[in-house]
Length: 313
Length: 313
Image (cartoon, rainbow over all chains, first blue to last red; front, top):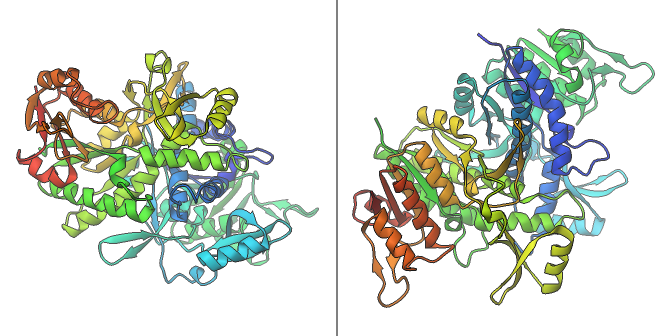
Protein backbone atom coordinates (compact mmCIF):
# COMPACT_ATOMS: atom_id res chain seq x y z
CA UNK A 1 0.00 0.00 0.00
CA UNK A 2 1.36 3.46 -0.90
CA UNK A 3 1.61 5.92 1.94
CA UNK A 4 -0.82 8.82 1.97
CA UNK A 5 0.11 12.43 2.63
CA UNK A 6 -1.93 15.60 2.87
CA UNK A 7 0.12 18.62 1.80
CA UNK A 8 -1.16 22.08 2.75
CA UNK A 9 0.32 24.71 0.44
CA UNK A 10 0.29 28.36 1.50
CA UNK A 11 -1.76 30.74 -0.64
CA UNK A 12 1.07 33.22 -0.22
CA UNK A 13 3.50 30.75 -1.76
CA UNK A 14 1.85 31.40 -5.14
CA UNK A 15 2.28 35.17 -4.85
CA UNK A 16 5.72 36.05 -3.54
CA UNK A 17 6.84 39.26 -1.87
CA UNK A 18 7.11 42.05 -4.42
CA UNK A 19 4.95 40.27 -6.98
CA UNK A 20 1.67 41.61 -8.30
CA UNK A 21 0.46 38.03 -8.58
CA UNK A 22 -0.18 37.78 -12.29
CA UNK A 23 -1.41 34.39 -13.42
CA UNK A 24 2.02 33.79 -15.01
CA UNK A 25 3.80 34.57 -11.73
CA UNK A 26 1.45 32.30 -9.80
CA UNK A 27 1.96 29.54 -12.33
CA UNK A 28 5.75 29.82 -12.12
CA UNK A 29 5.58 29.65 -8.32
CA UNK A 30 3.19 26.70 -8.50
CA UNK A 31 5.73 24.88 -10.67
CA UNK A 32 8.39 25.29 -7.98
CA UNK A 33 6.16 23.72 -5.33
CA UNK A 34 4.73 21.07 -7.65
CA UNK A 35 8.20 19.99 -8.78
CA UNK A 36 8.87 18.84 -5.22
CA UNK A 37 5.42 17.28 -4.86
CA UNK A 38 5.88 15.39 -8.16
CA UNK A 39 9.16 13.94 -6.83
CA UNK A 40 7.31 12.88 -3.70
CA UNK A 41 4.69 11.13 -5.85
CA UNK A 42 7.50 9.45 -7.78
CA UNK A 43 8.74 8.08 -4.46
CA UNK A 44 5.40 6.34 -4.06
CA UNK A 45 3.32 8.76 -2.04
CA UNK A 46 -0.39 9.24 -2.68
CA UNK A 47 -1.03 12.92 -2.08
CA UNK A 48 -3.95 15.19 -1.38
CA UNK A 49 -3.15 18.86 -1.86
CA UNK A 50 -4.91 21.64 0.02
CA UNK A 51 -4.06 25.30 -0.29
CA UNK A 52 -4.58 28.76 1.14
CA UNK A 53 -6.04 31.68 -0.79
CA UNK A 54 -5.26 34.84 1.21
CA UNK A 55 -4.08 37.18 -1.56
CA UNK A 56 -6.36 35.62 -4.18
CA UNK A 57 -9.48 35.98 -2.03
CA UNK A 58 -8.47 39.54 -1.19
CA UNK A 59 -8.22 40.30 -4.90
CA UNK A 60 -11.59 38.61 -5.54
CA UNK A 61 -13.28 40.73 -2.88
CA UNK A 62 -11.76 43.89 -4.28
CA UNK A 63 -12.82 43.04 -7.84
CA UNK A 64 -16.36 42.40 -6.66
CA UNK A 65 -16.44 45.68 -4.78
CA UNK A 66 -15.10 47.76 -7.64
CA UNK A 67 -17.78 46.45 -10.00
CA UNK A 68 -20.60 46.40 -7.44
CA UNK A 69 -22.59 49.14 -9.14
CA UNK A 70 -22.56 47.31 -12.46
CA UNK A 71 -22.81 43.58 -11.76
CA UNK A 72 -23.98 41.35 -8.92
CA UNK A 73 -21.76 41.17 -5.85
CA UNK A 74 -19.83 38.12 -4.77
CA UNK A 75 -20.38 37.32 -1.12
CA UNK A 76 -17.32 36.20 0.85
CA UNK A 77 -18.21 32.50 0.66
CA UNK A 78 -18.53 32.94 -3.12
CA UNK A 79 -15.11 34.63 -3.29
CA UNK A 80 -13.64 31.59 -1.56
CA UNK A 81 -15.47 29.33 -4.04
CA UNK A 82 -14.06 31.17 -7.06
CA UNK A 83 -10.50 30.99 -5.71
CA UNK A 84 -10.84 27.22 -5.44
CA UNK A 85 -11.05 26.74 -9.17
CA UNK A 86 -8.69 29.67 -9.81
CA UNK A 87 -5.87 28.18 -7.74
CA UNK A 88 -6.88 24.63 -8.61
CA UNK A 89 -6.48 25.47 -12.31
CA UNK A 90 -2.99 26.86 -11.62
CA UNK A 91 -1.83 24.05 -9.33
CA UNK A 92 -3.29 21.33 -11.52
CA UNK A 93 -1.57 22.56 -14.67
CA UNK A 94 1.74 22.91 -12.85
CA UNK A 95 1.50 19.50 -11.20
CA UNK A 96 0.40 17.67 -14.35
CA UNK A 97 3.29 19.23 -16.24
CA UNK A 98 5.83 18.28 -13.56
CA UNK A 99 4.47 14.74 -13.40
CA UNK A 100 4.72 14.36 -17.17
CA UNK A 101 8.32 15.53 -17.07
CA UNK A 102 9.01 12.65 -14.68
CA UNK A 103 7.13 10.23 -16.92
CA UNK A 104 4.44 9.68 -14.30
CA UNK A 105 1.00 8.94 -15.65
CA UNK A 106 -1.30 9.89 -12.78
CA UNK A 107 -4.63 11.64 -12.86
CA UNK A 108 -5.16 14.93 -11.03
CA UNK A 109 -8.53 16.38 -9.99
CA UNK A 110 -9.53 19.69 -8.44
CA UNK A 111 -12.49 19.44 -6.13
CA UNK A 112 -14.30 22.56 -4.86
CA UNK A 113 -15.05 21.84 -1.21
CA UNK A 114 -17.50 23.20 1.34
CA UNK A 115 -16.74 23.05 5.03
CA UNK A 116 -19.43 23.21 7.67
CA UNK A 117 -19.00 25.70 10.48
CA UNK A 118 -21.17 26.12 13.57
CA UNK A 119 -23.26 29.31 13.67
CA UNK A 120 -22.81 29.31 17.46
CA UNK A 121 -19.01 29.30 17.13
CA UNK A 122 -17.63 32.00 19.44
CA UNK A 123 -15.58 33.32 16.51
CA UNK A 124 -18.79 34.87 15.15
CA UNK A 125 -19.03 37.03 18.29
CA UNK A 126 -15.62 38.58 17.75
CA UNK A 127 -14.61 38.69 14.08
CA UNK A 128 -10.83 38.96 13.96
CA UNK A 129 -9.56 37.96 10.52
CA UNK A 130 -8.74 40.99 8.32
CA UNK A 131 -9.65 40.54 4.65
CA UNK A 132 -9.89 42.55 1.44
CA UNK A 133 -8.79 46.10 0.71
CA UNK A 134 -7.81 48.94 3.02
CA UNK A 135 -10.19 51.86 3.49
CA UNK A 136 -10.11 55.39 4.85
CA UNK A 137 -11.87 55.88 8.18
CA UNK A 138 -14.76 57.60 6.40
CA UNK A 139 -15.37 54.79 3.91
CA UNK A 140 -14.85 52.17 6.62
CA UNK A 141 -17.55 53.77 8.76
CA UNK A 142 -19.91 53.90 5.82
CA UNK A 143 -19.34 50.17 5.17
CA UNK A 144 -20.03 49.48 8.82
CA UNK A 145 -23.25 51.46 8.70
CA UNK A 146 -24.53 50.21 5.35
CA UNK A 147 -23.29 46.63 5.31
CA UNK A 148 -22.90 45.83 9.00
CA UNK A 149 -19.22 45.06 8.58
CA UNK A 150 -16.83 44.79 11.50
CA UNK A 151 -13.90 47.11 10.94
CA UNK A 152 -10.44 47.33 12.52
CA UNK A 153 -7.63 49.79 12.18
CA UNK A 154 -4.59 48.17 10.59
CA UNK A 155 -1.30 49.61 11.85
CA UNK A 156 -0.46 52.39 9.41
CA UNK A 157 -2.31 51.26 6.31
CA UNK A 158 -5.89 52.29 7.11
CA UNK A 159 -9.03 50.41 8.04
CA UNK A 160 -10.02 46.94 7.08
CA UNK A 161 -12.95 44.58 7.27
CA UNK A 162 -12.62 41.74 9.75
CA UNK A 163 -14.61 38.54 9.56
CA UNK A 164 -15.06 35.52 11.78
CA UNK A 165 -12.69 32.60 11.43
CA UNK A 166 -14.73 29.76 12.91
CA UNK A 167 -13.50 26.22 13.48
CA UNK A 168 -14.12 23.69 10.71
CA UNK A 169 -16.70 21.15 11.86
CA UNK A 170 -17.05 18.86 8.86
CA UNK A 171 -15.63 18.59 5.35
CA UNK A 172 -18.87 18.19 3.38
CA UNK A 173 -17.27 16.64 0.31
CA UNK A 174 -15.29 14.15 2.41
CA UNK A 175 -16.98 11.06 0.97
CA UNK A 176 -16.24 12.23 -2.55
CA UNK A 177 -12.64 13.12 -1.70
CA UNK A 178 -12.07 9.74 -0.08
CA UNK A 179 -13.47 7.87 -3.06
CA UNK A 180 -11.36 9.87 -5.51
CA UNK A 181 -8.23 9.42 -3.41
CA UNK A 182 -8.95 5.67 -3.19
CA UNK A 183 -8.90 5.57 -7.01
CA UNK A 184 -5.30 6.81 -6.87
CA UNK A 185 -6.26 10.23 -8.25
CA UNK A 186 -4.21 13.12 -6.90
CA UNK A 187 -6.76 15.46 -5.40
CA UNK A 188 -6.57 19.24 -4.98
CA UNK A 189 -9.28 20.09 -2.47
CA UNK A 190 -10.32 22.29 0.44
CA UNK A 191 -8.97 25.46 -1.18
CA UNK A 192 -8.77 28.47 1.12
CA UNK A 193 -9.77 26.26 4.03
CA UNK A 194 -13.04 25.39 2.32
CA UNK A 195 -16.16 27.39 1.46
CA UNK A 196 -17.70 28.15 4.87
CA UNK A 197 -21.30 26.99 5.07
CA UNK A 198 -23.87 26.54 7.82
CA UNK A 199 -26.59 23.89 7.98
CA UNK A 200 -30.07 25.33 7.78
CA UNK A 201 -32.80 22.91 8.70
CA UNK A 202 -32.47 19.33 7.53
CA UNK A 203 -32.04 19.79 3.83
CA UNK A 204 -30.22 23.02 3.20
CA UNK A 205 -26.92 24.74 3.66
CA UNK A 206 -26.25 28.44 3.37
CA UNK A 207 -23.01 30.31 2.77
CA UNK A 208 -21.33 31.99 5.72
CA UNK A 209 -19.49 35.32 5.44
CA UNK A 210 -16.44 33.93 7.20
CA UNK A 211 -13.09 32.38 6.39
CA UNK A 212 -11.74 29.12 7.75
CA UNK A 213 -8.06 28.78 8.54
CA UNK A 214 -6.70 26.46 5.86
CA UNK A 215 -4.31 24.68 8.24
CA UNK A 216 -7.11 23.92 10.70
CA UNK A 217 -9.30 22.53 7.90
CA UNK A 218 -6.35 20.63 6.51
CA UNK A 219 -5.69 18.99 9.89
CA UNK A 220 -9.33 17.94 10.02
CA UNK A 221 -9.27 16.46 6.51
CA UNK A 222 -5.91 14.77 7.24
CA UNK A 223 -7.50 13.05 10.24
CA UNK A 224 -10.66 12.12 8.33
CA UNK A 225 -8.52 10.60 5.55
CA UNK A 226 -6.27 8.90 8.09
CA UNK A 227 -3.14 9.99 6.21
CA UNK A 228 0.32 8.82 7.21
CA UNK A 229 1.73 12.33 6.97
CA UNK A 230 0.34 15.84 7.34
CA UNK A 231 2.76 18.24 5.70
CA UNK A 232 2.47 22.02 5.85
CA UNK A 233 4.46 23.72 3.09
CA UNK A 234 5.24 27.28 4.12
CA UNK A 235 7.94 29.89 3.62
CA UNK A 236 10.44 28.82 6.29
CA UNK A 237 12.49 25.64 6.26
CA UNK A 238 11.38 24.77 9.76
CA UNK A 239 9.73 26.16 12.89
CA UNK A 240 11.91 28.31 15.15
CA UNK A 241 11.88 29.39 18.76
CA UNK A 242 12.61 33.11 19.16
CA UNK A 243 12.01 33.54 15.41
CA UNK A 244 13.86 36.46 13.81
CA UNK A 245 15.79 37.18 17.00
CA UNK A 246 19.51 36.57 17.62
CA UNK A 247 18.58 33.65 19.81
CA UNK A 248 16.42 31.97 17.14
CA UNK A 249 16.77 28.21 17.11
CA UNK A 250 15.30 25.64 14.73
CA UNK A 251 13.14 22.78 15.99
CA UNK A 252 14.01 19.56 14.12
CA UNK A 253 11.83 17.23 16.21
CA UNK A 254 9.24 17.71 18.89
CA UNK A 255 6.23 16.06 20.44
CA UNK A 256 2.81 17.72 20.35
CA UNK A 257 3.21 18.42 24.08
CA UNK A 258 6.55 20.11 23.57
CA UNK A 259 5.14 22.23 20.74
CA UNK A 260 2.24 23.25 22.94
CA UNK A 261 4.64 24.41 25.66
CA UNK A 262 6.50 26.57 23.14
CA UNK A 263 3.20 27.88 21.76
CA UNK A 264 2.09 28.89 25.26
CA UNK A 265 5.44 30.61 25.78
CA UNK A 266 4.66 32.83 22.79
CA UNK A 267 7.23 31.52 20.33
CA UNK A 268 4.86 31.32 17.37
CA UNK A 269 3.20 34.42 15.93
CA UNK A 270 -0.61 34.47 15.89
CA UNK A 271 -1.96 34.58 12.31
CA UNK A 272 1.34 33.19 11.04
CA UNK A 273 3.20 30.19 12.50
CA UNK A 274 0.75 30.00 15.45
CA UNK A 275 -2.20 28.43 13.60
CA UNK A 276 0.13 26.04 11.75
CA UNK A 277 1.57 24.75 15.02
CA UNK A 278 -1.90 24.56 16.56
CA UNK A 279 -3.14 22.55 13.59
CA UNK A 280 -0.23 20.15 13.82
CA UNK A 281 -0.80 19.68 17.57
CA UNK A 282 -4.49 19.10 16.87
CA UNK A 283 -3.66 16.50 14.22
CA UNK A 284 -1.30 14.55 16.51
CA UNK A 285 -3.57 14.79 19.59
CA UNK A 286 -6.44 13.31 17.62
CA UNK A 287 -4.56 10.28 16.43
CA UNK A 288 -2.37 11.58 13.59
CA UNK A 289 0.98 9.84 13.22
CA UNK A 290 3.38 12.43 11.93
CA UNK A 291 3.38 16.05 10.82
CA UNK A 292 6.06 18.14 9.16
CA UNK A 293 6.30 21.91 8.73
CA UNK A 294 8.80 22.93 6.08
CA UNK A 295 9.24 24.85 2.81
CA UNK A 296 8.89 23.38 -0.70
CA UNK A 297 12.64 23.79 -1.17
CA UNK A 298 13.23 21.48 1.79
CA UNK A 299 10.33 19.12 1.24
CA UNK A 300 12.31 16.20 -0.17
CA UNK A 301 15.04 16.49 2.46
CA UNK A 302 12.33 16.70 5.10
CA UNK A 303 10.90 13.37 3.94
CA UNK A 304 14.32 11.85 4.63
CA UNK A 305 14.26 13.40 8.10
CA UNK A 306 17.01 15.83 7.20
CA UNK A 307 15.03 19.08 7.21
CA UNK A 308 11.83 20.62 8.52
CA UNK A 309 10.16 20.41 11.90
CA UNK A 310 8.80 16.92 12.62
CA UNK A 311 6.04 16.57 15.15
CA UNK A 312 4.92 13.22 16.50
CA UNK A 313 3.01 11.91 19.52
CA UNK B 1 -27.69 -0.83 -15.16
CA UNK B 2 -29.05 2.68 -14.62
CA UNK B 3 -29.32 4.81 -17.71
CA UNK B 4 -26.89 7.67 -18.07
CA UNK B 5 -27.82 11.19 -19.15
CA UNK B 6 -25.79 14.32 -19.74
CA UNK B 7 -27.85 17.44 -19.02
CA UNK B 8 -26.56 20.77 -20.34
CA UNK B 9 -28.05 23.64 -18.33
CA UNK B 10 -28.03 27.16 -19.80
CA UNK B 11 -25.98 29.79 -17.93
CA UNK B 12 -28.81 32.18 -18.63
CA UNK B 13 -31.24 29.89 -16.84
CA UNK B 14 -29.60 30.91 -13.55
CA UNK B 15 -30.04 34.62 -14.26
CA UNK B 16 -33.48 35.36 -15.65
CA UNK B 17 -34.61 38.37 -17.65
CA UNK B 18 -34.87 41.41 -15.40
CA UNK B 19 -32.72 39.93 -12.68
CA UNK B 20 -29.42 41.41 -11.51
CA UNK B 21 -28.20 37.89 -10.86
CA UNK B 22 -27.57 38.04 -7.13
CA UNK B 23 -26.34 34.79 -5.62
CA UNK B 24 -29.77 34.38 -3.98
CA UNK B 25 -31.55 34.78 -7.33
CA UNK B 26 -29.20 32.31 -9.01
CA UNK B 27 -29.71 29.85 -6.17
CA UNK B 28 -33.49 30.11 -6.42
CA UNK B 29 -33.32 29.53 -10.17
CA UNK B 30 -30.93 26.61 -9.66
CA UNK B 31 -33.48 25.04 -7.31
CA UNK B 32 -36.13 25.16 -10.03
CA UNK B 33 -33.89 23.30 -12.49
CA UNK B 34 -32.47 20.91 -9.88
CA UNK B 35 -35.93 19.96 -8.65
CA UNK B 36 -36.60 18.43 -12.07
CA UNK B 37 -33.14 16.84 -12.24
CA UNK B 38 -33.60 15.33 -8.75
CA UNK B 39 -36.87 13.74 -9.92
CA UNK B 40 -35.03 12.34 -12.91
CA UNK B 41 -32.41 10.83 -10.57
CA UNK B 42 -35.22 9.38 -8.47
CA UNK B 43 -36.45 7.65 -11.61
CA UNK B 44 -33.11 5.87 -11.81
CA UNK B 45 -31.03 8.06 -14.09
CA UNK B 46 -27.33 8.62 -13.51
CA UNK B 47 -26.69 12.21 -14.51
CA UNK B 48 -23.77 14.39 -15.47
CA UNK B 49 -24.57 18.09 -15.40
CA UNK B 50 -22.81 20.65 -17.57
CA UNK B 51 -23.67 24.33 -17.67
CA UNK B 52 -23.14 27.60 -19.48
CA UNK B 53 -21.70 30.72 -17.89
CA UNK B 54 -22.47 33.64 -20.22
CA UNK B 55 -23.68 36.26 -17.74
CA UNK B 56 -21.40 35.01 -14.96
CA UNK B 57 -18.27 35.13 -17.13
CA UNK B 58 -19.28 38.58 -18.37
CA UNK B 59 -19.52 39.75 -14.76
CA UNK B 60 -16.16 38.14 -13.92
CA UNK B 61 -14.47 39.97 -16.81
CA UNK B 62 -15.99 43.26 -15.78
CA UNK B 63 -14.92 42.82 -12.14
CA UNK B 64 -11.38 42.05 -13.24
CA UNK B 65 -11.29 45.08 -15.48
CA UNK B 66 -12.65 47.48 -12.86
CA UNK B 67 -9.96 46.44 -10.37
CA UNK B 68 -7.14 46.11 -12.91
CA UNK B 69 -5.14 49.00 -11.53
CA UNK B 70 -5.20 47.55 -8.03
CA UNK B 71 -4.95 43.77 -8.31
CA UNK B 72 -3.77 41.25 -10.89
CA UNK B 73 -5.99 40.73 -13.90
CA UNK B 74 -7.92 37.57 -14.65
CA UNK B 75 -7.37 36.38 -18.20
CA UNK B 76 -10.42 35.04 -20.02
CA UNK B 77 -9.53 31.40 -19.40
CA UNK B 78 -9.21 32.25 -15.71
CA UNK B 79 -12.62 33.95 -15.74
CA UNK B 80 -14.09 30.73 -17.12
CA UNK B 81 -12.26 28.77 -14.41
CA UNK B 82 -13.68 30.91 -11.60
CA UNK B 83 -17.24 30.59 -12.92
CA UNK B 84 -16.90 26.80 -12.78
CA UNK B 85 -16.69 26.74 -8.99
CA UNK B 86 -19.05 29.72 -8.70
CA UNK B 87 -21.86 28.01 -10.58
CA UNK B 88 -20.85 24.58 -9.31
CA UNK B 89 -21.26 25.83 -5.75
CA UNK B 90 -24.74 27.13 -6.58
CA UNK B 91 -25.91 24.07 -8.55
CA UNK B 92 -24.43 21.62 -6.07
CA UNK B 93 -26.16 23.19 -3.07
CA UNK B 94 -29.46 23.32 -4.92
CA UNK B 95 -29.23 19.75 -6.18
CA UNK B 96 -28.13 18.29 -2.84
CA UNK B 97 -31.01 20.05 -1.14
CA UNK B 98 -33.55 18.82 -3.70
CA UNK B 99 -32.18 15.26 -3.47
CA UNK B 100 -32.44 15.31 0.33
CA UNK B 101 -36.04 16.46 0.11
CA UNK B 102 -36.71 13.34 -1.95
CA UNK B 103 -34.83 11.18 0.56
CA UNK B 104 -32.14 10.35 -2.00
CA UNK B 105 -28.70 9.79 -0.56
CA UNK B 106 -26.42 10.40 -3.54
CA UNK B 107 -23.08 12.16 -3.65
CA UNK B 108 -22.55 15.20 -5.85
CA UNK B 109 -19.18 16.54 -7.02
CA UNK B 110 -18.19 19.66 -8.95
CA UNK B 111 -15.24 19.16 -11.23
CA UNK B 112 -13.43 22.11 -12.84
CA UNK B 113 -12.68 21.00 -16.37
CA UNK B 114 -10.22 22.06 -19.06
CA UNK B 115 -10.99 21.50 -22.72
CA UNK B 116 -8.29 21.38 -25.33
CA UNK B 117 -8.73 23.52 -28.41
CA UNK B 118 -6.56 23.61 -31.52
CA UNK B 119 -4.47 26.76 -31.98
CA UNK B 120 -4.91 26.36 -35.75
CA UNK B 121 -8.71 26.37 -35.43
CA UNK B 122 -10.08 28.79 -38.03
CA UNK B 123 -12.15 30.43 -35.27
CA UNK B 124 -8.94 32.13 -34.08
CA UNK B 125 -8.70 33.92 -37.43
CA UNK B 126 -12.13 35.51 -37.09
CA UNK B 127 -13.13 36.03 -33.46
CA UNK B 128 -16.90 36.32 -33.37
CA UNK B 129 -18.19 35.71 -29.85
CA UNK B 130 -19.00 38.96 -27.99
CA UNK B 131 -18.07 38.91 -24.31
CA UNK B 132 -17.84 41.26 -21.34
CA UNK B 133 -18.94 44.89 -21.00
CA UNK B 134 -19.91 47.45 -23.63
CA UNK B 135 -17.51 50.29 -24.43
CA UNK B 136 -17.59 53.65 -26.14
CA UNK B 137 -15.81 53.76 -29.50
CA UNK B 138 -12.93 55.65 -27.92
CA UNK B 139 -12.34 53.13 -25.13
CA UNK B 140 -12.85 50.23 -27.53
CA UNK B 141 -10.15 51.58 -29.83
CA UNK B 142 -7.80 52.03 -26.90
CA UNK B 143 -8.37 48.40 -25.86
CA UNK B 144 -7.69 47.32 -29.41
CA UNK B 145 -4.45 49.28 -29.52
CA UNK B 146 -3.18 48.40 -26.03
CA UNK B 147 -4.43 44.85 -25.60
CA UNK B 148 -4.82 43.66 -29.18
CA UNK B 149 -8.51 42.95 -28.71
CA UNK B 150 -10.88 42.38 -31.58
CA UNK B 151 -13.82 44.75 -31.30
CA UNK B 152 -17.27 44.79 -32.89
CA UNK B 153 -20.08 47.26 -32.83
CA UNK B 154 -23.15 45.86 -31.08
CA UNK B 155 -26.45 47.14 -32.47
CA UNK B 156 -27.28 50.16 -30.36
CA UNK B 157 -25.44 49.39 -27.16
CA UNK B 158 -21.85 50.30 -28.05
CA UNK B 159 -18.70 48.35 -28.78
CA UNK B 160 -17.71 45.00 -27.43
CA UNK B 161 -14.77 42.65 -27.34
CA UNK B 162 -15.11 39.55 -29.51
CA UNK B 163 -13.12 36.38 -28.95
CA UNK B 164 -12.69 33.14 -30.80
CA UNK B 165 -15.07 30.27 -30.13
CA UNK B 166 -13.01 27.28 -31.30
CA UNK B 167 -14.24 23.70 -31.46
CA UNK B 168 -13.62 21.50 -28.43
CA UNK B 169 -11.02 18.85 -29.29
CA UNK B 170 -10.68 16.92 -26.05
CA UNK B 171 -12.09 17.04 -22.52
CA UNK B 172 -8.86 16.86 -20.53
CA UNK B 173 -10.45 15.65 -17.30
CA UNK B 174 -12.44 12.96 -19.10
CA UNK B 175 -10.74 10.03 -17.33
CA UNK B 176 -11.47 11.59 -13.96
CA UNK B 177 -15.08 12.39 -14.90
CA UNK B 178 -15.64 8.83 -16.15
CA UNK B 179 -14.24 7.31 -12.96
CA UNK B 180 -16.35 9.58 -10.75
CA UNK B 181 -19.48 8.88 -12.78
CA UNK B 182 -18.76 5.14 -12.58
CA UNK B 183 -18.81 5.45 -8.79
CA UNK B 184 -22.41 6.67 -9.06
CA UNK B 185 -21.45 10.22 -8.07
CA UNK B 186 -23.51 12.95 -9.75
CA UNK B 187 -20.95 15.11 -11.50
CA UNK B 188 -21.16 18.81 -12.34
CA UNK B 189 -18.44 19.38 -14.92
CA UNK B 190 -17.40 21.26 -18.05
CA UNK B 191 -18.75 24.59 -16.79
CA UNK B 192 -18.96 27.31 -19.43
CA UNK B 193 -17.96 24.79 -22.08
CA UNK B 194 -14.68 24.13 -20.26
CA UNK B 195 -11.57 26.22 -19.64
CA UNK B 196 -10.03 26.59 -23.12
CA UNK B 197 -6.43 25.42 -23.18
CA UNK B 198 -3.86 24.66 -25.85
CA UNK B 199 -1.14 22.01 -25.72
CA UNK B 200 2.34 23.48 -25.68
CA UNK B 201 5.08 20.96 -26.30
CA UNK B 202 4.74 17.52 -24.76
CA UNK B 203 4.30 18.41 -21.13
CA UNK B 204 2.50 21.68 -20.87
CA UNK B 205 -0.82 23.34 -21.51
CA UNK B 206 -1.49 27.05 -21.62
CA UNK B 207 -4.72 28.99 -21.24
CA UNK B 208 -6.41 30.30 -24.37
CA UNK B 209 -8.26 33.65 -24.49
CA UNK B 210 -11.30 32.07 -26.06
CA UNK B 211 -14.64 30.62 -25.10
CA UNK B 212 -15.99 27.24 -26.07
CA UNK B 213 -19.68 26.81 -26.83
CA UNK B 214 -21.06 24.80 -23.92
CA UNK B 215 -23.42 22.76 -26.07
CA UNK B 216 -20.62 21.74 -28.44
CA UNK B 217 -18.43 20.66 -25.49
CA UNK B 218 -21.38 18.91 -23.90
CA UNK B 219 -22.04 16.92 -27.08
CA UNK B 220 -18.39 15.85 -27.10
CA UNK B 221 -18.46 14.78 -23.45
CA UNK B 222 -21.80 13.02 -23.97
CA UNK B 223 -20.21 10.98 -26.77
CA UNK B 224 -17.06 10.26 -24.76
CA UNK B 225 -19.19 9.07 -21.82
CA UNK B 226 -21.45 7.08 -24.16
CA UNK B 227 -24.57 8.37 -22.44
CA UNK B 228 -28.03 7.09 -23.28
CA UNK B 229 -29.45 10.60 -23.45
CA UNK B 230 -28.07 14.04 -24.21
CA UNK B 231 -30.49 16.62 -22.83
CA UNK B 232 -30.21 20.36 -23.42
CA UNK B 233 -32.19 22.34 -20.86
CA UNK B 234 -32.98 25.77 -22.28
CA UNK B 235 -35.71 28.41 -22.09
CA UNK B 236 -38.18 27.05 -24.61
CA UNK B 237 -40.23 23.90 -24.22
CA UNK B 238 -39.12 22.64 -27.63
CA UNK B 239 -37.49 23.66 -30.89
CA UNK B 240 -39.66 25.53 -33.37
CA UNK B 241 -39.63 26.19 -37.09
CA UNK B 242 -40.37 29.84 -37.91
CA UNK B 243 -39.80 30.68 -34.25
CA UNK B 244 -41.65 33.76 -32.98
CA UNK B 245 -43.58 34.10 -36.21
CA UNK B 246 -47.28 33.42 -36.75
CA UNK B 247 -46.34 30.28 -38.61
CA UNK B 248 -44.17 28.92 -35.78
CA UNK B 249 -44.50 25.19 -35.31
CA UNK B 250 -43.05 22.91 -32.65
CA UNK B 251 -40.88 19.93 -33.59
CA UNK B 252 -41.73 16.96 -31.36
CA UNK B 253 -39.56 14.41 -33.18
CA UNK B 254 -36.95 14.61 -35.90
CA UNK B 255 -33.95 12.79 -37.24
CA UNK B 256 -30.55 14.44 -37.34
CA UNK B 257 -30.94 14.72 -41.13
CA UNK B 258 -34.28 16.48 -40.80
CA UNK B 259 -32.87 18.88 -38.24
CA UNK B 260 -29.98 19.65 -40.55
CA UNK B 261 -32.38 20.50 -43.38
CA UNK B 262 -34.24 22.91 -41.13
CA UNK B 263 -30.96 24.37 -39.90
CA UNK B 264 -29.87 24.99 -43.49
CA UNK B 265 -33.20 26.63 -44.20
CA UNK B 266 -32.42 29.18 -41.47
CA UNK B 267 -35.00 28.15 -38.89
CA UNK B 268 -32.62 28.30 -35.93
CA UNK B 269 -30.98 31.55 -34.82
CA UNK B 270 -27.17 31.61 -34.79
CA UNK B 271 -25.81 32.12 -31.27
CA UNK B 272 -29.11 30.90 -29.83
CA UNK B 273 -30.96 27.75 -30.96
CA UNK B 274 -28.51 27.23 -33.83
CA UNK B 275 -25.55 25.88 -31.82
CA UNK B 276 -27.88 23.70 -29.73
CA UNK B 277 -29.31 22.06 -32.83
CA UNK B 278 -25.84 21.69 -34.34
CA UNK B 279 -24.60 20.03 -31.15
CA UNK B 280 -27.49 17.61 -31.11
CA UNK B 281 -26.92 16.73 -34.78
CA UNK B 282 -23.23 16.24 -34.02
CA UNK B 283 -24.07 13.95 -31.12
CA UNK B 284 -26.42 11.76 -33.16
CA UNK B 285 -24.17 11.66 -36.25
CA UNK B 286 -21.28 10.41 -34.12
CA UNK B 287 -23.16 7.52 -32.61
CA UNK B 288 -25.34 9.13 -29.93
CA UNK B 289 -28.72 7.42 -29.36
CA UNK B 290 -31.11 10.14 -28.36
CA UNK B 291 -31.10 13.86 -27.68
CA UNK B 292 -33.79 16.12 -26.26
CA UNK B 293 -34.03 19.91 -26.26
CA UNK B 294 -36.53 21.23 -23.74
CA UNK B 295 -36.98 23.49 -20.71
CA UNK B 296 -36.62 22.43 -17.06
CA UNK B 297 -40.38 22.89 -16.65
CA UNK B 298 -40.96 20.27 -19.33
CA UNK B 299 -38.06 17.97 -18.51
CA UNK B 300 -40.04 15.22 -16.79
CA UNK B 301 -42.77 15.23 -19.43
CA UNK B 302 -40.06 15.14 -22.08
CA UNK B 303 -38.62 11.96 -20.55
CA UNK B 304 -42.03 10.37 -21.06
CA UNK B 305 -41.97 11.51 -24.68
CA UNK B 306 -44.74 14.04 -24.06
CA UNK B 307 -42.76 17.26 -24.44
CA UNK B 308 -39.55 18.65 -25.92
CA UNK B 309 -37.89 18.06 -29.25
CA UNK B 310 -36.54 14.51 -29.58
CA UNK B 311 -33.77 13.88 -32.05
CA UNK B 312 -32.64 10.41 -33.01
CA UNK B 313 -30.72 8.77 -35.81
